[in-house]
Amino acid sequence: MSTAHPLRGAALCLTAVLLFACMDATTKYLVAHYGVPLVMAVRYLGNLLLMVLVLGPTEGRRMAETQRTGLVLVRAAALACASLFFGLAVMHLPVAEATAINFLAPLLVVLAAGRLLKEDVGLAGWLVALLGLGGVLLIARPASGLDPLGVALALCAACSNAIYQLLSRILATTERTVAMLFYTALTGSILFSLSAPWFYDGRVPSAFEALLLASLGVYGGAGHFLFTAAFREAPASLIAPFGYFQLLWAGLLGWAVFGHLPDGLSLLGMAVIAGSGAIVAVRSGRPPVKRTA
Image (tube, rainbow, N blue to C red):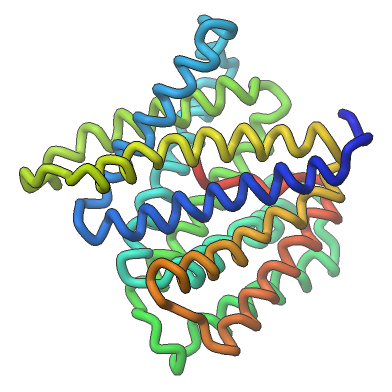
């Protein structure tokens, strides 16, 4: 891995998480008009199409080659569940708060890694994870006015995302990244395409809505490409904390598009989660695994 361009790596990561935040804000706008499975079907199909068009000519059949196909499919299904829960969550929550709660996933991985992956978490790891949980409590406190259903759905998204990240660690030793991304896009496309007709009310998207729907796959595909490229330019310990700037982008987009500005305690909670996650990422030397596909 090259370490010669840390500023370029940081810029790539910041751009990638901006695209992820744009995808989440676009999802929030669209799920107010269309069923969540329908929106997710378009997103995953767009991502799959991009993969086939961009990587298909060079990867060919290798894109579908795996050694532990069963676990790869379970991992893909976990991400599909995370996407579904997050899409449902942003129907009830502002983008910034939903994003912050979802970033609890890396901290849940820390709590599970010691027992399931036999990793040395240590007292510091447990304390950082509990600190991140405290950040969630600041956001979702009773006086915050957030919809409890939305908070519960965001927590379900975080738990599904944690399973996805744990399986990503397990499979990283035997599976190629391209193959895991391909099966993620393929599984999501199949699952959501099968369910989407039950949630389609016959409404024809406007030109603007069609553009937004088409942008979802682009945001996800381009975001993942730039996010991966960032870690080729600089060490993970330097780049990983920049992944948590997605919380900043989510807050700015939530304010600009939906007119929502988190209160002081919610902002403090987001900062606590971001700081805790960044510490975990630096200590483990791994990039934060993204929820999006």
